[in-house]
Length: 74
Image (cartoon, rainbow, N blue to C red; front, side, top):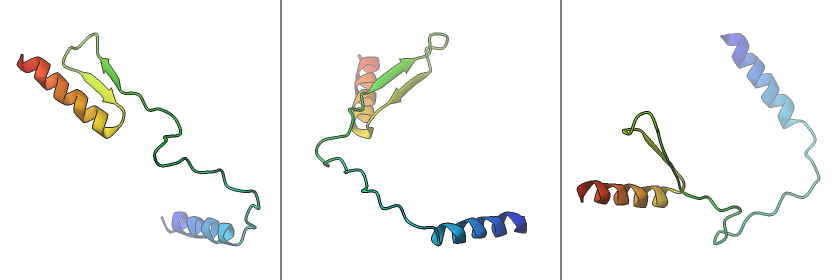
């Protein structure tokens, strides 16, 4: 176990003394404009109707869950 910590410390120390790259960093995306659109995805398991995977932005996933609850209540 000590060996792992010693190796991690050695790697960290060697990275600290390594020369830093001089290339310019990539420009950051503007906060109002996402770098790429992140669509909402809803995947249902064809073998088990109880299983559904919803991926995307948190607000979009919450809205999709609210819509599913309304559909089930109707």
